[in-house]
Image (cartoon, rainbow, N blue to C red; front, top):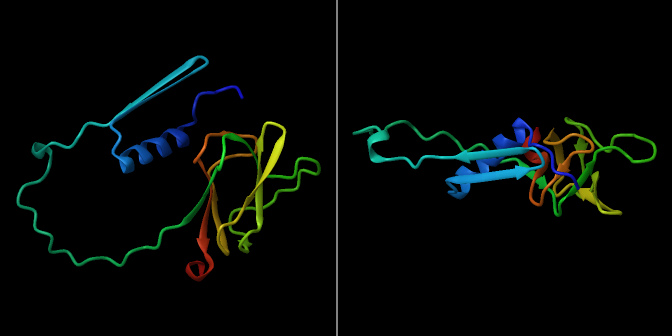
Length: 146
């Protein structure tokens, strides 16, 4: 699998995951590219002084469910023979519905919906290479989709 330079949305996803996990620096290298992402730790001088938390708490917005790559491979969002898409954003899907395929070497692994709900978005395009844990689909549970 040839490595290509990460797309901007992939870099944003990496930066978001870095911040969530507490990583302060990461460097990606490949054939003809090098990307370095760094976060400066927050110092007390950067934080506002005497801020009182008097604002009422907003209701928590339920998180969306993400379907992530179980292995590194190539994502297929349409059937490899007849080119019919497995699903589209906005489409209602049931639990264990086939949403796509992950080609790992010569093996095609099914990407199935972990919940019953609505496909909110696709984080990749057909034929994109993904690494382990990369987000592929975002789904909203059916009871939250209404």
